[in-house]
Length: 218
Length: 393
Image (cartoon, rainbow over all chains, first blue to last red; front, side, top):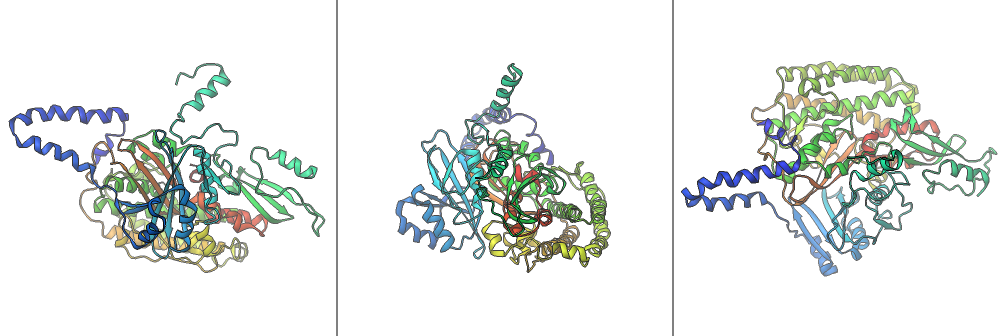
């Protein structure tokens, strides 16, 4: 059994993806005409892995804020984890309320994700935890490339470095941050590595071209 | 800005010193100016490649700025270009003295995303190895921390005893440090013949060793002078700064993810969460010493109750989690280690974020050393127990 998990590691992802899809129809073909019940079972099987879907998150806290802010706020729960999709304009208010009124006193993490095909390219995510309630919540908002977002350093001092890292990796600027500059990468770094359009080889290839005067061939 | 300040600024041109006020170094009663002192990145007391820029008045620290990133390897970018299983060994290279904990957090996060669970036997093996690793991590912390402060002997003692844990790791999975001990869905390896015996032997071997460490330090007058009331941080400050792990507990906040939100098999074991009162370096030392005892308690219970059964859950050959996001965190030896994974339904994570405890804890350094002496900076860096591989990722 243990070897089952070992096997997917060596082949590169495209191969691993193709193999099961290529084999399944071939194996299913001789079975399907023999039994009429088999095709009925087949569509049911792929539906299974779809598994859990985000459900609306219902709680008194959410109801309160929804009545206050209306459509700018959407609360969902997935695999037992709650998150709020919040309109960008509401961000400073919601974060402050979560800390002051809902006791989310510990900002676990601030991060982002890049979706280049979307109009608003970035998701900014706050992961919060409340010591008194022993509860986590995630706050998400979408912003466009080049747009700024209010800093939460005045709410949780820990946001200082976390926001700097988001800026470093995604180029998202935080308004009102006391010292917004790169943190992990050198100041002279070009581009923002965790954006999807930042290729992992471009830096190497460019260095080889400039310093060695040849094409790297990677 | 006077000339001297300008010169300083030029010297440090790679990273601007905007945090520190270089505009007006005023004369003090000692008739000396403020001094900017560069510590690291190559410095034995920074535990790796950490650069701290200190602003000093004589020996008193007025402010600090950490310059990090020297070990940045782009782990999060690598994750987006690897399958879930291929990325598994990479997490060991973050906190390389507690590689097993990193692997546990990652495997559990992906398991949550896949909605599968490791079988009980795998969970117990995970707990045993993770707690052994916690002891190993604390031993390395103790040895280097004491060495920084000037006590050389504990380093030899701790490294001698840590060897026994690394031997168990080596026998179990062939590696000593970057173990890659767990797989998504369980463990790859069944325990070797004599595993339980080795672990039990270690427990009997190690109990008197902790006493040995304590005999050297706990009531040692120099140790007390160097650690009592040094690097004090309050519980409220810890929470505001996101500091977790033994540092938070030493400040009196009784919070441990193993109890607060149990993962693996931790809910089945009986153990205490040690806390301190003063939030100083000595309390953090005591908390970690007691944590080693508690880890031994957990290991003993887990080894005695190790259930039979499979060690691998029902995980598909090709790991393709459904579209969704998950955050999962564990109590690593340094604090809360979290993984935030966004899946787009493919074989590779769309986005993988690591919430490293060392990175967040290091941010508290400035608060902890303000007003202290230069020598205390070394003590505080040691007591924070940072691993630069995890800070920079």
